[in-house]
Image (cartoon, rainbow over all chains, first blue to last red; front, top):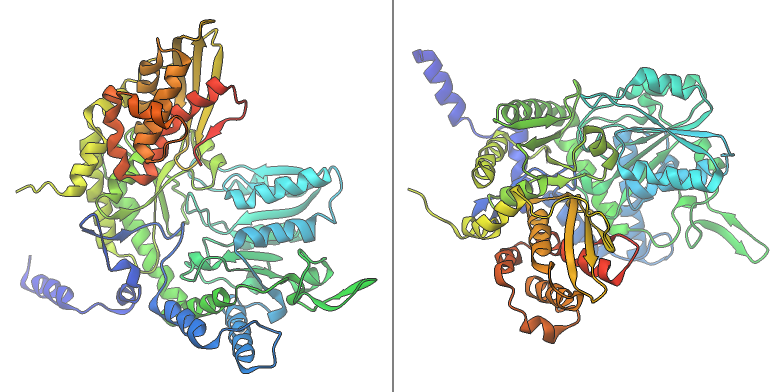
Length: 422
Length: 161
């Protein structure tokens, strides 16, 4: 090593954490040990941790401002309503929805998809109509469509994937022209990490008058999402995968579609006038928000979005993309390790198998070294069937992960090989 | 210098040699032709999916038992040792074992508490290590729940969820 190289290395080592590397300190849950090892959290695709900004925003609301929303004339109700609706504005700007009427609070991605299946599709479908999904969908983007097919006599079509975990878009495009009334597709696969080339898929679908719902649960924390640029008809995502709380999520829908849809649930807040001879529904988005909503969840989600905006989505994507490449490369060098999901364009996730060790055993052994990964079918059993495996181990990254996390993961695999060795 | 931490000890206790042996080379593995009783055990968390077969004589004795399917090391070893244990027992005695194993691993006796306390678990004590791993107790008890279900002749797959 030359003197200048040594100098450079010293300089790099002594450089204080810059930019995104500092974010880890914002997440109190990450600063702990598990089984005497520092926690290495690689399960953000299942649920991400929350930054102090979110935790404190929720605590502040619950300590000082809680009341029901849209109902009272008193000060607390006014404050709660302001915070709840303010969060909606924040989220609208974050995904670039054209209007706040297009941003519906739900309990999460699952409810968002069920809402569209029941309120948008069910009234339109007749026997013989088709709904198109892909082979890499999460169960929450499969089962709601199976239900609506059972209810209407419609048929579920599945676009195939290839060995790398990429959707076969040629086949998908030809399927679109066969009487399909709805395309429901992930933005990012939760089991494989594949990023779907949504823009061209949506363009093609629209050229055949097929509306498109995007399951964005695994995309929003990693990629800048602009629903107007994508031109999707519906976009569903969850708070708890993007550093917000559980039990809150969003359905974006184009206003003209939401307007024409009947309510999903009936109750308070979704009405303008109730009489026994007929009820007038409230305006958008309230028509789809029956009952007292998850107020603190919505406010917490707003805080999570502000956190993401402060860090910056381009910086997050660049950091994670570099780290994912590093992780896949490091894992790929482990003897006996098989990578599952090797698409060219990926986000956050790497699934794998080690020798013939069952993923669940691997998960337990890693946990005892402080490394938290997800093991099993990842709510994507058809993907597991496609690869002929009962499940996989899945390491997933978020903005707070770094190369040390990946190195700990790789090192911890040695213990598994030792226990299950020949 | 190698320091054996408590967590490493727990891991070794979970993956004891007997369990690893039965996971690698499961006994009584395969389909049992002419089975009189069968049941499916599913653990959706792990993806364990086992099918258990039993031949029970008219006098109530389990003359043979086999299993097939796939699962984690704990669930496969448990199915292997379960079949090993119950062959030759009356179904009543086998159910007592079921109660005893579940009680021992979960701390929650599910019926037959008295029977449970009388049973000598023998080599099944190898599974005691799972007590330190709450998410794995279901793996260790899956085959036993399926045994119970097969004997009670429940038609729905038994799930540990």
